[in-house]
Length: 95
Image 1 (spheres, rainbow, N blue to C red):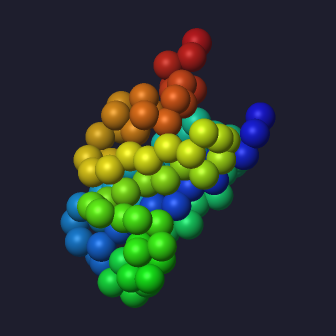
Image 2 (image 1 turned 90 degrees about the horizontal axis):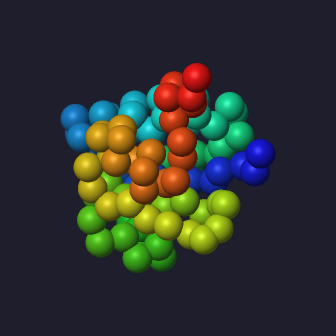
């Protein structure tokens, strides 16, 4: 299994940011068997990283690996949307 590499851009410790981080961590733990790296970037602390990545809305999740690179913008606290956008089959649905 290849490793998944993500960058998650959030805005501080808002409720939306906290929910987004929680949802993404659960998805990774339950579906990627430890084969992931997640960098969480707070745009308040690191605005230059957001600018470099061309971030126009928050939250934004960038999947760097496996290629092709993909982005999900907004509503990352909806589990089914994140799974579908990343092309990850939920291990919980596999019997």
